Length: 378
Image 1: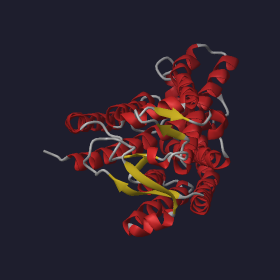
Image 2: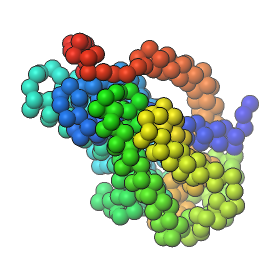
Image 3: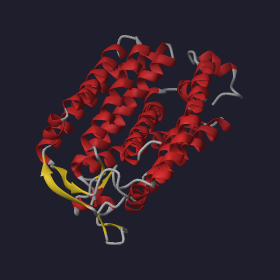
């Protein structure tokens, strides 16, 4: 049987894999939605753009549901605090996501420019708002969120929605939108030809430097302005979950944390190099290799965040002792084991099915295809 400490680490890794899967798949959907009104100059252009993600966007969105389900089942204290404290932000993400299925399904029902243009902008909102607010969340995770636990382990959020929109978090939100649009533009260039391909490659050319510069600024800002808490005493890595059974001191260095574990530097290195490769190759037309580079880069960025926070899942800025870690915010040993075996059995099936779907639908989406299949394509 897998011991409690090990299964907690395994689920931390699983949660990271799901977050990466969501970012890489739903990420290019978000990016293409955000770019739709700008890269599609005519109705046919926009239909071509939509049909590059038309067969797969619903399946990609399942990664978000899986991520939420993993938090609910495996990290219930984190789920309860995050979703209750950031209720307004979560609702904004949810409402913006509502625009995606309606936009895809209703846009082409009526052959009217005003109708279709309105749904195009709805899809823009559905593509731009979620990565913006998720980037804001990442910025606040780095700084710490204002919450505390009482002696009964009930969470109390001490901040407000507007406090989330601080300068550093907004920078992370802008990086999130730019990174998804960059990733989406590379995918769009991979799946199209002609003028749309040219516009997508040009978009890669100006978005790439923005993403890279934004990440560098965010890293320097983090090192210069924010401290990282450190655990000085705790019950044990295999003890029952109770976040208050530890002593945490604030104000330590992020650089010192990475220096203590030099292998962690591989994540930001892969992140920067991968995005740089995506930028350089994306402009030349080697879209497949550029997409691989972009995917590695985004994975490296998420791994950097995970490594930087480890073993924390969410830091409290008002009561560091209430911060959640992988050692004291998890479900019971039995629950983690049950969820583990369910995941081991069914996740490979999902991945194989997803691979089959992409194999079936793969190929360039052309204007001719869209015009010849007006009643079956978006």
